[in-house]
Image (cartoon, rainbow, N blue to C red; front, top):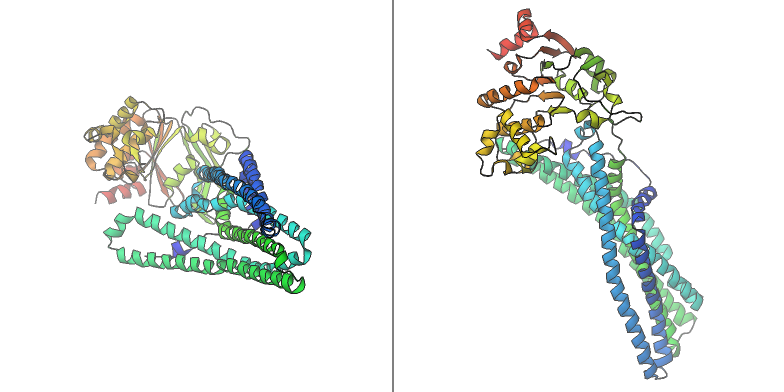
Length: 589
């Protein structure tokens, strides 16, 4: 099985890391009250961490040495109380921040999903579904730790490091300098790691996306895989993608694991230097041991948050690629969108006009070339022609799924670019070749076409298209639960339900793109009877390869070579014995 489409990594815009981090952290502004409470808690915790070494120093020098055990017991009691309060507040802080971070994740995910719904088909045409899902789920989830640790790690640990440093300098500058002597080693090490780590995590995110895309597509197409006995080839592709995913993770982790080692080496150098200065240079002995013990505690209190800050920085490097991928989706401008001076589409009467329309999906390859036609309200137009001639393109332009490069598409003399997309599409009924059904009941799937439809309207729509009989034979009837994509139903049954969903919206313009392609002959006769009723009084465009289904159309357009090669009703075109006549004869051979 071809692997190139899955191995092709997505392009991610190169944005400054600081800009991405600042944008990510801006989501915390919606939770100012909670964060202020957390910061107060953290201020108390920092205070306890600063006081504990002083308590230890005082216990050694002021109470244990002179054997003042009564004073020592009071000091210990105070220490126990303030530390118990510390533990309680730590749990409260964790609970509050869990609510904040999950709230932000929910907001980001909703923004991504909402924005995806505004994007045009071109965006989705060029991306496998699995890669899009990877951004909505995996990449968004990766932001949780960064958001959480920004508040509970970055801010308090920065304040703690600063406070400890100030106290050490005040108490003994030479010892303070020795206690932080490992910082240059750490700075050089982290700079080297950062330059290597970000690129490797970007690569890993892309490999994860490739693997997700492959899994989604192969599971969705499992019937095809089994039908062609392609399990072995599929497994080979899967193994290669998994190997790339594993190798990219190992490459990234190898660099990341150096973080802790660099910090531990820097801390060890600092502690050794501090003891050397304390004992050899300052001559600290047993009777003044408290200050050295206190400084050891302060040094630990200095280097522990440094390690936490290093880990936080490590998280940023690890997850910044995820944030970049998420924000790139949010920042993608839809090619099809409402213009600033857009107006609402009035109630559609049904006139459709193409005015010198040219269109291409790719630059330089025109699918339609200077197409002109004028449809009066209530006409039924059939579009026929070879595959790729542009039949579906015509109806896609009417629906404004794509925009023309030249010319205009007008409905009731309104340029479709000048009216809001919602007011246009809400008055159209579109049934494509993809009879997609959602997970849920049959009733819910049909009601998707009209969210406020009554049960009676749903039943009438199903009777119209010939779906009512098979639905009532199901154990739960209209309340039958459908699995993903309508599993358990035949292709014909799924098509009938999709047709009912389209009809119930009572569209002013009806578009049927291969509407009966998956229906057997018996079902087709039932649907055709319903179609004839529904087509009356509304403008309709019918695309069909089965030419027997469009004989009663008011006009038939034969699309070929980017334009309308022939036009007329069935009898006229048959009498011409041109392209349409040849197509008819080919189907009757």
